[in-house]
Length: 339
Image (cartoon, rainbow, N blue to C red; front, side, top):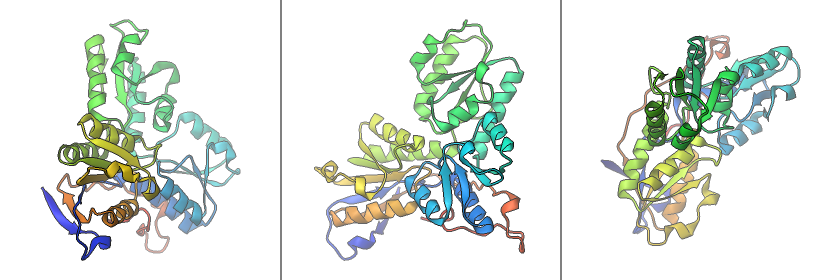
């Protein structure tokens, strides 16, 4: 089901094409929490507030926070001793925490609680004497953080083909964990390959792929089934956004990543009457609105909203960032944007 809207740019204009907006789309609870942590740290402590790596993988959010005084660094070693340092939503390894302590940094941890759960599962499986098979993309910050919990007992697996290349006996006690932002379908294929090969395999109690990634992939599958083209708003380094593009293409629909309006290639619209739009879990709604308005100018003025999963998950911000007078955590403009 979809409900009809009208884009601001198309009011009163005759149009031929239409746009269908995915639901849900955009910010997840972990992203809202992470952005809100940086905003509140700036409100309470003033600039600069140092952030290790991008707080979330979106260039617009990073740019807006930089304007307010956030300083993004690649390593905790770049942060002045004793300064405030926010750890990103993707989590960090124990070695990073040790390095921050060595520099007496005032750490504020914005790790997504769902990522933190994967870290705890890794420690539990190591205590049980198992080798961890971490399904994910080598080099991704989230994978690097989990890998750092037990690097000597963890192997990263990206594809089902990688499973067959593992230099382990089939009866080795192993456990699998997954990066939270993967394609649900591709991960299922990798896990099936692990189960087919290893006789002593265990996994997490719940899926590690986060609810938001699954919901957005499901919504994109529905978009791809009924639209001529799917556009996913998200940055090139956003794993969940890239997976959404892949999911649409796997359904036989043309699909492209659009980091912002300037990346829209009008040639994609040739022969297209309906455009589906979604956005990754770290993409702000303002970028979606700008894309919708541009499409309206190009003749796609009818806007409908897909009916999908309702997300009501909220992750609380640390109490130390509450208002010192009221004891409450105020709303923040970037983190609390609404559709």
